[in-house]
Image 1 (cartoon, one colour):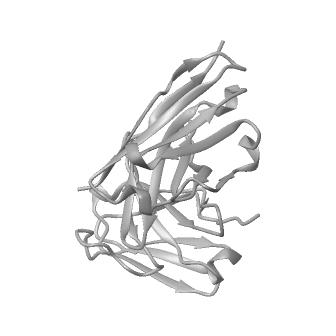
Image 2 (cartoon, chains in turn cyan, blue; image 1 turned 45 degrees about the vertical axis):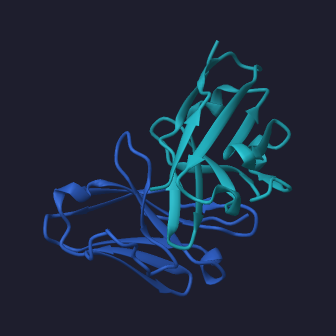
Length: 116
Length: 106
């Protein structure tokens, strides 16, 4: 059974950086674009970014453009989200997610708290 | 940019049918997916390609589509179905979620 596992969350001060990781197992990771989706406390799901299957293209929500960078290493079955210039409104549970047809995978998420 | 609109809440009694709608122009171009999220859990896929149900999802969950609206129907709702439900659809190079619907089974 395929799964995704996020790591790298934590408490960080405003303006600082953090790198999230998403490691896949049990499915053909290099075939999937990887999305990052976040959920602020008590709020809904919000798309953040997508990294294409080979890492050659990345697209971002307007609210993270210029601050977040997505990448992946298919040899390690791992995707990354480098977050910089973090703000208090970036506080959320961050999921990595991928899907194609009936196949869909979500991690359990990693919590990012931006606070002084 | 695209938007998907869902009612913020829906309430039904056990055994009744719950209908959760999701509307947006995007849905005339792209398929919708529905996920269920319970507190502290990752989302779970219920419906893909507007109407298809993955193996292992109970038959009481079904999807339908009409124009710019897709609908998740829960026939014979159970107390265990209390959760948040989100529609989503992938315009080119991104993913759009509806605001989510909190289903209460009274």
